[in-house]
Amino acid sequence: MTLPQMRALPKLVTVRSFFLILLFLSLLCGFSVEAADKKTSKKTLPFSPGEQLVYQIRWETVEAGVASFYVLPVTKLDQQPCRHFSLKVETSPLVDVVYEVRAKLDSYTDLALGHSIRYGKKETGSEPRDILVQFDWEKRIARYSNFNAGKKPITIPPGTFDPLAAFYKLRCMDLGTKKEIKFPITDGKRSFMGRAKVLGKETITCFNTTYDTYVIEPELIHFGGVFEISDKPTLRLWITSDERRLPVRIQSKVIVGSIIGELVSVR
Image (tube, rainbow, N blue to C red):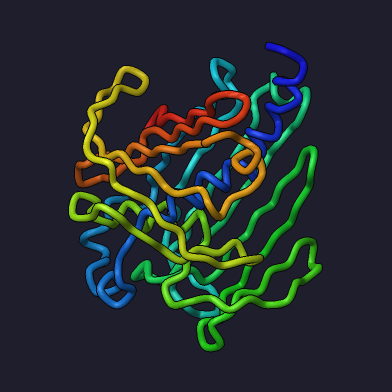
């Protein structure tokens, strides 16, 4: 491993980089908002409170960190029942030397998984953050703040999700019926429609477990950073074709090599 590569590594495994992967996941849920709200119900959800998904993140052969996703019990915000999802991200001891990240995200949606209600991100380490995004669906705006310092609200279209909620909305979609899909997403600072292609089916093995999956390739036109400076960057996702619709592998090729996230365990 060269010194320039080591310097590039933290840029690839920061929480912001992992958020990009979550954003890409959110692009895959092509559907009309009205139809999705009617079809998504408690009986049809492929997950339930208590579920935990753990992913190992690697840069080439280097173990870069771990991401753990949690489905928490239904709760209330301002007397409104809502679903609660959480994500914890932690860089490995090797990466901690050059760029330490400890982060926790929380996402709240309506019970029908039709849109986000609130999104929060607390991050310690090299770049501390305390971000809150509040969704006002009467005015169709999202309000972003970091350590209570707010930005101008942005307009959002119906059915918009934060990156973490979109990870779960994706699992409610039937990818086998689609070839090209799009979806509205926001992190509170900007909102846009992303597009992705369903390339077909593939059988893969992750940590000695074999999965039948759909292969998804999002377009990268809206994303900067390491993707912008890379020559022909790519990103592909493998999502199981069974009723659980688990994202089991995420792989991108950028200027300094490959970033790979693979499902380690399901609880």
